[in-house]
Length: 419
Image (cartoon, rainbow, N blue to C red):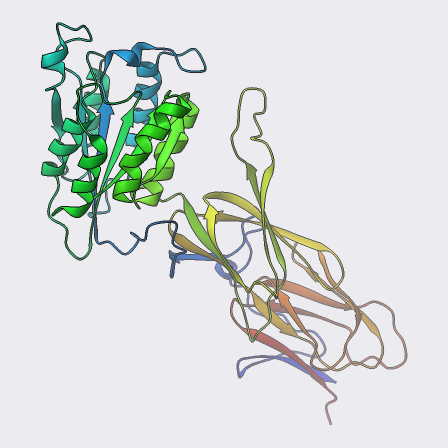
C-alpha cells in the first residue's frame, strides 16, 4: 500500500505508509506565542457609524474650549473641571494619529480674556482666539495650549462659533469639516448660538457642530441641543473626566479622526469555515474592577457569515470546536481600521475500512477521533497534523501519517494499494 498527499495538484510522494511534509516554520501556528497565523490589511467596506465621513480624503476638526470662570467648579468626582479637561485633552491629543496625511486638527478657546465679573464682561464677551490652526496634527502646539488653558471669563459661544467658521476651508468633495464645542454653560454674552450653528451648516464650509455639555444640567443641555441639531452634529453630556473622555472619543471616531475599531474574518475555503467565538478583555476598568467588567464576546457562524466589523481594538481569544469536540483557542490582534484574517486550511480525508483514527495537531489537541469516510473535510489551522490508527481492526488501509496543512490550501490524503 502507498499513500501520498495532494495539495492543489502538487503531489508529495511518501515512502511506504509514512510521509512527512517539509516543515515551513513561518507558515504554521506559532505555538510558543499562542498567536494564530493572521493577515492584516486596511479594512474594506467599513460599517458606517452615524454621519458618513469615512470616505473623506481630508478631515478638518477644531476643538473649541470654554475658558469661562465656571470651569473652576468641581465635577461629580470632586475634581475641578479645568483639571479634568486638561487631563482628558492630553489623552485625546496623544491618541490622534499624526502620520495619516489627511487629518487636520485645530484648537480655539473662548471667554479667555477679561474676567468673570461684571466689569470684565465686555472684554470677555469679545474673547475668542484660534490658538492652533487647522493644519496637520501638531501635538506639541496642541499640548502647549492645553497646559496654558485657564478659566477666566464669560461664555461667548456664538462669537466662538462664528469666528471658528473662518478657520475652515470651503466645503468640497472629499473634505469633512467639523467642530467640537466643549462648554460647561450657556451663552452669557447675548448671542444666538442656535442661529450661528444654522449659518455654519448652510454656509461655505458646511460644517457640523458637535457639542459636549461638561457639567451642564439637563435643562442647560436641552438648551444647547439646538446647536447640534441645527448643524447635524452630536449632543453629549459629561459630568466627570471619564465621561468627557468617552464623549470626545465618540465624536472623534464619528468624524473619522480616531479609529478605535477593526474587522475580523475567518478564512472561508470552499464554503467551509468554523463557528468562532471571539472573546476580548472587559471594558471600563476601574480601581475596584481592574479587569474592566464584562468581557466583550463576538460570534461568527454560518448564519452571520465569516466576517465581523466594528470590533474594538485589542487582543482577543478566538475559539472553535474541532469535530472531536475539543476546543482550539488562539490569540488574534484586532487593529484600528484594519482587517485581521484568521488563516485556515482544509484537510481532506481518504477512504477507510471502518477503522477509527485520531488526528492531533502539533500541540497535541485532538482534532478527530472517528472513522474515515471518503470526502470528509476538516477546517484546521495551518499546522502539522499526526494521523494514527487507534485500534487495528481487520485490514487497515493506513497506519500513520504526518501531514502539513498550509494556509488557504486543501490538503488531500490519498491511500491506495500498490500493485
